[in-house]
Amino acid sequence: MSARPIVIDTDPGIDDALAIMLAAASPEVDLRGLVAVAGNVGLPYTSGNAAALADLLRLDIPVGKGASGPLWRRDIDFTPDVHGEDGFAGHSLPVSTRSFEPGVPLLARLIEESADPITIVPIGPLTNIAMLVNEYPETARKVERFVIMGGGAFDVLGNVTPVAEFNIWFDPDAAARVFAFGVPITMVGLNATHQATVARKHLPRLFASGGPVAEIVGHLLAGYHNVGVDMEAAMPQHDSLAVAGVIDPDVFTTVPAFVDVENVGRLTSGMTLVDRACESGEPNCDVAVKVDVERFRDLLDSRLSALDASLRQD
Ligand code: BDR
Ligand code: CA
Image (cartoon, rainbow, N blue to C red; front, top):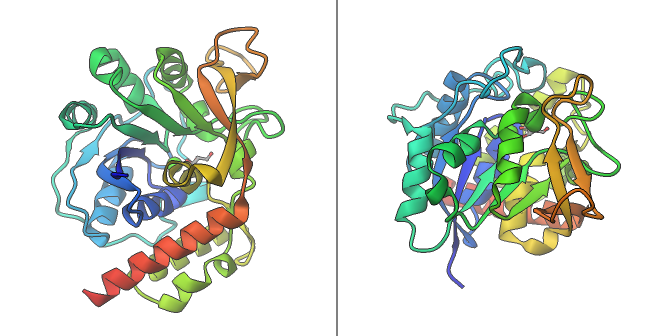
């Protein structure tokens, strides 16, 4: 089977970095581009981090600079408490000299140029994707699927508020637009990602390898320490679980549901309403539910260690 063409829309971000590395390391997917969006930190940092990662991984792909903030919300604060001021918890990579393409036109170009339908993996706020849908609706309809890290269902709903996950909460208007658009969606929400926890001890081959990927991943995992987390504690790898689901569909199971996003609620803004009975609408989403955590950790460790070895040899 030929590799599935994908584009990652991202706000790197510690777990975003691992997700991009996993995609770059996996022959099942053909990573065609990275598009940055504001989220974990501002766009100058997320775009700079995306380009720096592309350099580190020697990716010959375009890097786009997309939206610098939500479609409408103006009361947003960034989250330096989780990812640090620079998005990488103070462990920035060498500054890239790459030039950036405008992000939303780049998404459209990559979709149009691909012989096979593209899978888009948004692992940050959905602002760029909503702009794609609004500005290039016919192009956006050619997308195979959006595999979105965002939201929460059933037992785990929120991490910014009791009912809202960060990526959806940051730009609920964009998220509502994307979920209503009609392209198939896989939603990898907190109920799934909180099962996908990883600590250093779960990546033994990577850390035995000791190359550039091991070095930065070691720093990034330790970065969570800055927010008061035990260095050996296993933290959810939200974004790489979404990428893992594209590489290996057996990493998690899904259930069909109708999903809508609350974007006007006083207390519930950014909540994903997940209706399994589909009483409020036709199913528009496959919602990740049960994660095979050993399979996920093994995938991360085997792929990142192989990537590390290949970069060390060159
Ligand atoms: C999501 O928010 C960000 O902090 C992470 O990178 C992830 O995409 C988890 O809620
Ligand atoms: Ca992210």
